[in-house]
Image (cartoon, helix red, strand yellow):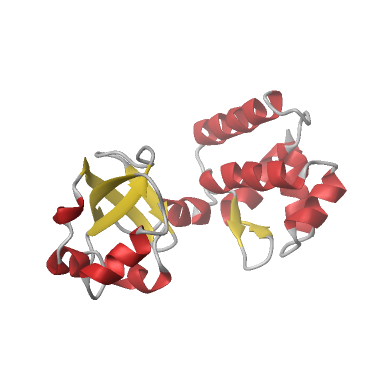
Length: 193
């Protein structure tokens, strides 16, 4: 579920807590969370609604000036109309995670096991240590260049680096990636093994 850039700050401020989307099936569910560029959103409700549910007031609650402006946006998509209620839940939890370079021995072992699991399920064999290593050597390098150096499909690598990011090991830059302090610690520990 994506949001227009101009709605992001009002969401963070708690001014926008409602969205309408046309979907074949919902991409979020009540009780779940959604990670966005501004942080974490908690999904409070996802309801199928009739078009008459949208009024000028609910359009403004969802960040649109008028009902017609929202309807114009919704008309670009096909599917059932859903109303999503949510609230801002704070900063991206991966930020605090990636800054935590100090880890207990048990935590490090769990993380290394997770990485080994990613390697075992990979069509490219062990890739996590190699990927972390090349990101350390070549920060801010385009994903295509990293994929070529690793001899891995670019799209597969981009999805896989997101998994490393979710573990707090990498950070996305405007172009490419860099290791987080946590990623540096993990890579150093792995090299000492």
